[in-house]
Length: 346
Image 1 (cartoon, helix red, strand yellow):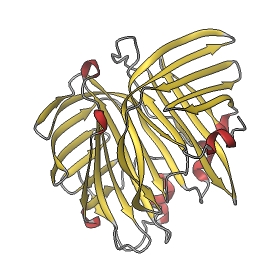
Image 2: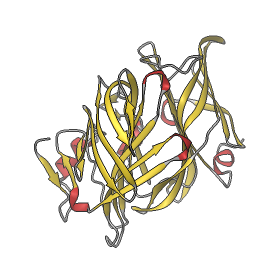
Image 3: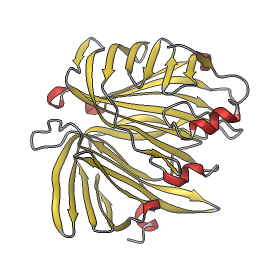
Image 4: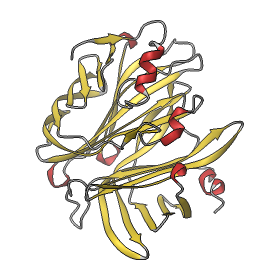
């Protein structure tokens, strides 16, 4: 990886950060005195839905800088998780796009190479990515956040680098070989100060009765409480990619939430936009514990599953044009106080 640089004592130049707005995959460097985190989420599922795994490299910069570090986090089915910590000096990034290193581990739009070892366990090998399918980046809507990406005081920013891509390669995790030949992958990222106080997130690109991958079909669901000018609102970004078309239902494009419920480890959501109606139901999550950012420091807890299901139905003018179940779904259901349902007025 050429031209990689380490974090200096001050933020990257304004020209770099301005260009990064339209390139969400690259390191955004939103460092401020209140702490900062940035993390990439790379999910890989083998052929036939075998051995789902998510690898999360990133940086954690707490306000005091006493515990600042780089990290690689991993989650597998059955709630198995691991966390490897590195000195912040061992985080390196490219000014030309999504290319980073954390210690000897490398991540880019072309693939990832792992060399992880320590008390958390061992993981090594390489996975190559095929052509990515990013959420469209446009002049006035630079990615999945739309015009909200331009707002300078958001608690968390979000990017989807690939809704779906092919995989090849092999990883070995604690002595078990994981073959990703003919598998499917998904890539997103978050950066900012802290995760929201409440959110629902789900993603799957393995649709069909047997849970096999249908290349080019993927759903991504995010519903979260967003602090805003001393108050808050519930924002939502939901996208269904199918037959080369992204059907987007978002706070900023006029979509409306018609139904929302979060009960007993399941979530149900219905959205409408113009002549389209999208229904999603998340169920069957068996989560493991991941670390999450609070004012930059990795002091929070997220419960995530990689073996849930997402039932999806898309209608146009009342006629069903897509109806399938996504398997091997990544899911996080984080709303202990009912903030989302209260915020949506349901």
